[in-house]
Length: 106
Image (spheres, rainbow, N blue to C red):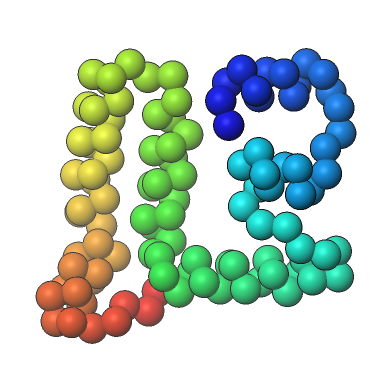
């Protein structure tokens, strides 16, 4: 969703349906209320199995700080975050397991 469309939604203050929010890209999935807890648990399980907690936290920090940066600052920040992520124990473990053709379970 572009900034213009986001501004329009905020300024109008109109309610939208979940299906409309998905079509706009505001949400990635829609499910019935009675399936919400099950779908949330399934997504959480998938994320935790496929990603290290440290990697997800660093990625979240990276994306949160990236918005609004100019290109030079963004590239510098990305370079530093990449270097920092490579120094974590989870990163070393992931690389080792990849090189040994092992499936990493986080």
